[in-house]
Image 1 (tube, rainbow, N blue to C red):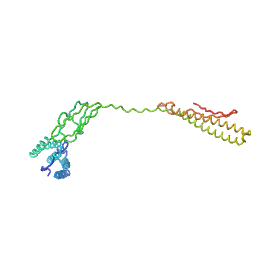
Image 2 (image 1 turned 60 degrees about the horizontal axis):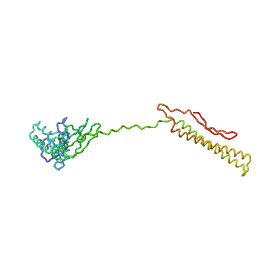
Image 3 (image 1 turned 90 degrees about the vertical axis):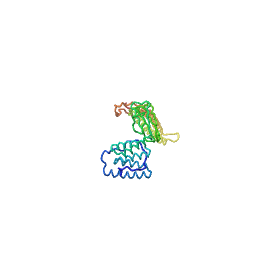
Image 4 (image 1 turned 180 degrees about the vertical axis):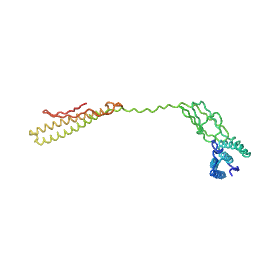
Length: 325
């Protein structure tokens, strides 16, 4: 049934694409032929309903599964009715070539009439390149074009023209190609130089520092401060014990001695806390300004140390800090 060209009102359509016709690379299987016949029948039914776009899809799939000259002519006529004049023109011309090779006069005439009918209403685009850049590539609807200043047929609709070249800002424009005969000129200007984006610079990080001495000094300072609070506690205990040996303004010798010891412990507490606080502050400063470590220099345990020194004599207590650096 598909091999005899039936008469039906089908129509215009489609995009200028690669041919959906021609001899298949391999002989269609029985399943392909059956599917092609069923798709062809569905397409005819859709044409009768006026549903042109889905009809064209089924004609195309039928032709893909089992290429036939009759199906190709139906497909070209369907695309013509759909408004895809460039696609229909290519299909009619291919059908004409096949019909002439097969010496089928009726189909030669059918194809010739289709070619003439569609060719008269082709919409064309002429690309004009002002000053092509080195390596410039121009595309129309994503397909590369290498011929310029020539009116080339395209299916009516939205046409996207793009131009790119290494080191240049890309150019892009959209053209609405109206149905019917005529040529639309699209000028592609000289591409401008693209802005040079400097490579990302690595963020400079502060060099690693040796914090060993800062930890030692600061840690020792904290220890000395804690010791100062211990001394303060002892002073308070001595003061309380001495107060019990006194009655108002009169104190026993034991009370007097206790007050002296409390004063000595209080003095030691104040000095110790002061020295410890100074050591902590020094440790904080050393943490930020300590010596830098070279990349190849491994961290090693510190050979410096510091410890508080506290002593007492007949004239009172002595508090200090000593160590090896």
